[in-house]
Length: 569
Image (cartoon, rainbow, N blue to C red; front, side):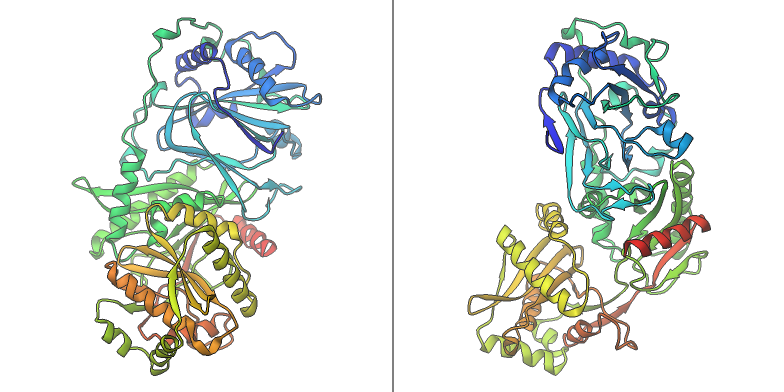
């Protein structure tokens, strides 16, 4: 069997319909505080079924073929409300872990989807727990498989793989605090089955005797009388579109608050929840908060390019207070210890109402972005854009033109491979650890459909000498990653490359070309010094944003985070 398998039409139609009837009848029994996921049952291999679930397990067993070492199956019901995620985790014997600290995984984990639930996929990563249970191997996921909730599809994967459910939507604060409880027709329903070579330890895993979920014992055979399960409302896609429009028209934010970026980060092991504040139905402030588990039982929250606040100081102060309060409520309900909240707002100076945060030095750990950048104003004419450059930059653009350097865009698989080769060559030359090819392949897969990303190349005599990955969002076009080869340097290909990117971005209506990260002006030994000197030749304005800021919730956990990150790097 492969590491991950997907079976369509896993159960016979009649049995599947009866299963859905029975689970719908369970309703919201025991759902509080994710109790549905803490109540599991044991079904020995070869035993006679006593309920509809065990009937289904017998039928699914032949698809899985877990091997002779399998002695039985642990099962439970998955029921998530609209907009609710399930944190990334690995399945294990939870009672054994609590009682002895020992970590034991099942042979296989599996999920049978009972209804269609848009925008809440299961994501399975290529990560496993380290032997001490304190970190992930590899530290960052290199690949991920995403499975949409489609009725009667059955996904089976190795029992030690990290996985979770990602609700791809930013929820309104009002919605999140609603006292209304969804009924079964509004829940994301799944049957989860683990295949074990030993029975998990009580009390979590118990025998089914009908005292819990009694409706599973009686099964209706009249499948034609079933009521169709309804999709959740409102549509998550519409809510994301509204959020993206708000962020895109707010200059003090950026693409890292967009839905496409959040979808991408979900494949890297991050979860997310959203906060939106509204006035007369319109969004006025908010944040998409990423959540990352960096070690067993420990996580941190991370707001990139945010929080997004209104320009009015008094309103911004109140919005910031509400956002922090809502995040604190999330933290209180988080099953893991939240060490800190990290924010990276696009503020040029720290507002007076922000206190208690500590600055994080640049490049201190992998989970932070550049805070200093250089931006070229594209609202001027092309002649003015050239005129404000340093003489050497302007001259080198002319050199490249005289040598016949050409600029092309190519987002094909070959283009992605060429980009990766040039980027890695540049990173090695500058002593910087490069991102793997999966990073850019997945990034493009999320941003390309919305035409928010492209790959540029500078070519000379049929050879690609320089490249740039550019992200379009709001008023800015951002040079996110790139590089150049150490050959034919006399033709000055990178200079023409970036000027043509500026011309294209201007044509598309963007007002600024953001050259992304630059080194501090007083640090010639900084690892970014070389390419910062190159970027300076294009002129523009230096933008020095406030540093990455951490609000520490738990000092001991924060120290644990620092140690875990040092070990990772």
